[in-house]
Image (tube, rainbow, N blue to C red):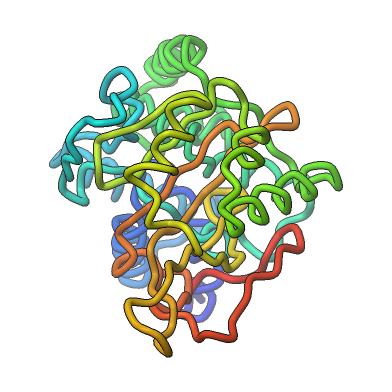
Length: 332
């Protein structure tokens, strides 16, 4: 018998799948809820010819395809055009325009074995999710079901109501599209060297030593700040921003979390008046490769993002961050 309790055990797996499909943690939550409702209503028709999780993935895929038929794709600032000038205006776009972050704890099942966990963490990285959003919905579904979940073409065809030949064609086109995009390097659980790099980055930011910080960046590192369309590339531009228009970040403190399969921190800025707690400023997601920081995404919509990660909007004066690799904070 398919009970609500049994269905709930699959929430994290389904959230990860819907997030990859939709590029939005909030929309993924809605899609998962609709999936579980549909499964509950039709539980008596589950015949056990496949695993319950496979059946739920099939329902979730169809829910996502329905949702994608009604809206345009989400993106990152880097998808919109070339790097911005330092003095470019800060143009905010609606929340629905951007890929937003998802807590690892919400999108990667706790019961995964290490190899499966590694694959699922890779597949919620910002670079990968952004690349997948470029694909038409059915190509997107086929690619994710095949390359992330390991489904056969026949299983995918059943899920998306297509022929096996159509699925194979969709996979070929999807893989050709992604082959021309920079997906970043796969990031396994941080090594000792990577943990040390992240520790040095946070230390330099909290001391606001921009010489030390930019020394840790790849020469082509990017910085973006959704919901603003502005984004920067390279040491000079990033340093100039942080010591100029972004200098209000001086004195920030960081609290460790984990987002999008990557190291992440809640950033809190100095209080507006003495005696007050530090106020939430951004959720920072770092991207790493070859011993350097390659990407810094500051998600500024803290009212929407922080509650999802279980993070307070104000940090008590005595609170401090603690980086220890993969942090448990996050999820609902």
